[in-house]
Structures are given as C-alpha cells and as structure tokens.
Length: 536
Image (tube, rainbow, N blue to C red; front, top):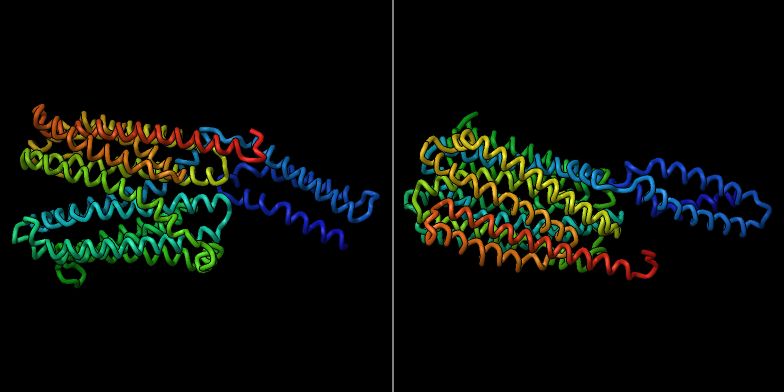
C-alpha cells in the first residue's frame, strides 16, 4: 500500500509540467491521442516496476526512470502527431481574432451612430463634437497603444502556465494605466483652460466646454478598461471583451437616443447628452471587466497572484518599457494624420469634406488589420515564452497572409461600393466625386498599412519594441508629411497628392518593421541554439 502511495506521488510530480502543457489552449485540442498512449504505457511500466523481484527502493527508482523516459516520449509523440503547420496557425489566428474583430467593428459602428445622431440634431453640435473628438483622439490612441504592452507579458506567463504571475501583471497594468490617466488628466486640464484660445467660433464654446469635460472623464475610464481587456486577451479569452464592448455599444446608442432628444422622461440635452451616454457606457465596461476578473471562479489563481504583493517586483517598469514605445508609435501615426489635415484645409472646404469621408471609411479597414495583428501578438508571445521559435515564424507569416487577404477584401469592397458608401456621409455630388479621386491612393496605401501593422505587432509579441520608435518617427514625420506636401502643392496634385504620401510612408514603415523583425527573430533563434542542453 505504501508503495502505491509513493508511486501515485511520483506520477503527480513527474506530470505536473505536462498537465500545465496540456491545459494551455494552444495544445489542449491536439494532444488527446498522445496523452492516452503515453498514459497507458506509463501504467504498464509502473505495474511492472511494482511487481518485479527487486527491493522497494529499487522499484521506486525504476518507476521514476520509466516515468522520466516516457515523459520525454510524450514530447516526441506530440511533435510527430501534432506538428504545427501554417494551416493550423491560420485557423487558430482567425479563431482568436474573430471576437476582437467584432469588438472593433462595434466601436466603429458606435462612432458612426454618434456622428449620425448628433449630426441630425444640429450642425453646431456636430461641429463641436468633431473639434473635441479630433482634439482628444491622439490621447485615446496613445493610451490604447500603451496598454498593448501588457498583452505579450500576460500571454507569455499564460504560455508557461504561471497564472499567479499573470495576475500580478494585471495589478501592474492597472497601476501603470492609472499613472498614465493622471498625466493625461493634467494635459486635458491645460487644454480645457485654453479652449478659448484655439480659434474656435465663439458660438461653439458653450457646447464644446461641457462636452469636453465628460469626454475627458470617459477617456480615463477607457484607459482602465484597456488594461483589463489586454489582460483577458493575453489569456486568449477574447470573447470576454467582445461581449462587454457590444453590450456597452447598445447602451451608448440607447443612451444617445434618450439623452440627445429627451425621450422616456429625460430632459433634452443635445451634445452633452451624447457625452454623458458615452461616459456611462464606458463606466459600465470597467465594472463589467472587473466583475468578470474578480468574481469568476475560473480566475481564482489569477486573483491570488493579483493580491500577492510579493509577486511582480519590477513588473511595473517592464510593463511601461513595452507600452511606452507602442503608445508613442500609435500616437505619432495619429498625429501625422491630424497634421496633414492642415494641408487639406488649405485646399478648401470641399476637399476637407471629401478627406473626412475617406478617412472615416479607412478606419474600418484599419480596425480589422489591428484585430488580426493583435491576435498574432498574443500567439507569438505564447510561443516565444515556450521557446517554440518555429511556431513564432509561422504565426508572423500567417498574420501577414491573413492581413494581406483582408486588405484585398477591404480595398476591393471600398472601390466597388465607393459611391453608396460616400452617400452615407454626404449628399453633395461634388464631395462624392472628389472622394472618388482618392480611390487609387487609398488602394495603394492599404498594402503598406497591412505590412507595417503585421510586423510591428510581431515585434510586440517578441517584446522587442524599442526599434519601433525611430522607424515610426522617420515614416510618419520625416517622410509622410513632406511627401504629402510636395505631391499636393509643388507637383499640383491637390487632395489626391496628399493621399499619395500615405503609401510612400506606410510602405517604408512596413519594410523596416519587417527587416527589424527578421533580424530580431534570427538573433533569438541563434541564442536559443547556444543554450546548454539544446541539441539543435
């Protein structure tokens, strides 16, 4: 009886790591046959070890030897029967990206709904909303980029089945986003007291000021939500944030209808009502994500790590180290687009309207590419954490293939349906005709945009983000802005020339992100081959 207890303990010790291995979602579905075969052989070997005519200590040693042997066999059979291919990676990537895509489309849909409902309420309200949203967009995008630094760290910890560490990362992610929120609050305070010095019409300021306050508060909520979202995404639980985002979107649209127009007994609040609706829906997203994490039985181990202050010393610095370059890169890209609007305004009102229509349409494509790339960063982090370098390369390739396919679908759909799409935003034939002239540069820059998004996120998955900053600065400021100016004015191409600057800068960024990724990947694999015990 004592021997059986000891053997059971041996089984538990030897298979602890492999239970964690099979518990990982990337391996669970493809390893059942291997588990069955090896478990049967282990049982057979243990019985023989128990009943062989040798003393008990020798039986135990023999059993341990056999366990170790068959543990190694487990990895061999896993590699033989479950060899990861580009096709399996693509399937997993699309499955993981699906909920992220739906969530991103929900965000775009609500943006459309907000513009539509405010626009139908009044022209001045639409102008005030446009000013505030454009003024705060850089802060929103920078905050989103900063939070993306958390995902690869969580995914790496989850790939190693270190759930307590993943929970500690959430604590530090919330802390770092809280610090960023305080900095952004100070920036918004300065902006608020200078709204009257920004050249806006006096009649818009009474609308701008209260709307700016509620939008600023909602942005701070977004930063906290982003930390929760990147945490659950890093755990490959992308459906969680999708459900929360969709629910909040429905709340936002319903709140807009009630508060903007004064329905269901509520006062008619116009633009301020739209801002309050957005704030309430974003508070809901924070509460819902916090509820899922802290009151879900499946999250107990993560919550234990979150509460254990002994875990995670130095993590805050690591989260900021990864998040800051990504946030600055995305902020610089947004800033570049915002600065180029100045050139568009120099061309005239018609050009500005056509430009805004095409930018709004292109945002849908951008959101889809980001969703696919974010899913690839999660997978690359997990594989890299387990030193599965071949799978890292396959995932990066699969991400670019899938994004390339998406660029073809998006660009083709916009070209084919450009006329009905523009009619959603304008009734002016002149604006629609001018927007149609942007079809060619729009088509060209999609491929460069897809390339740069794919490999910037591959670098994020590998936690090598420092090289992103100089490439982003050169691409978005040194190349994009001067190129757009030269095409538009000295070469006399007008609005179309401004848009021809985009494919030049984005393709440059994409090529250099790719070259940086290749150099980084080769360095990682070379270092892995030099590690002791590596037979490759």
